[in-house]
Length: 145
Figure (tube, rainbow, N blue to C red):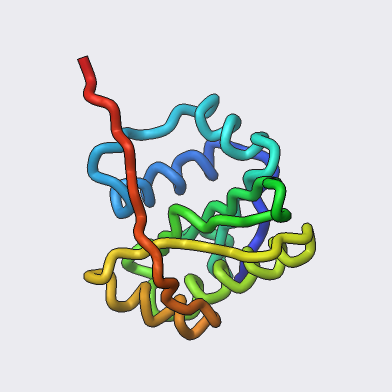
């Protein structure tokens, strides 16, 4: 039981990721093997997984890192634990592992966003040492033809 950095994809990993995606996004369809390969092998992007004692992948988190003139930064995205496995510390272990990895590779900060309605997730991030940042989040989304 615990967190691992997923460095190779397999049918088992793909199936588990596709089981978790609907909890992250209603508009994202299932990934294909080549889609997951792109994520796992993308420079500066790290996919973490949480496995039960039986070896079942029940949680994941993506850490994206990048270098800008002010240093290495990191961003946590797509944190999810299957509903059947929640409340057992998987989310906290995933976040802590990602923060530790970000520090190891020299990231000055680690950011994430979470909707206020996701009360349990917000409590988790505070437990892990995150603080609300006074800022605005903007999104540009071009119109689709």
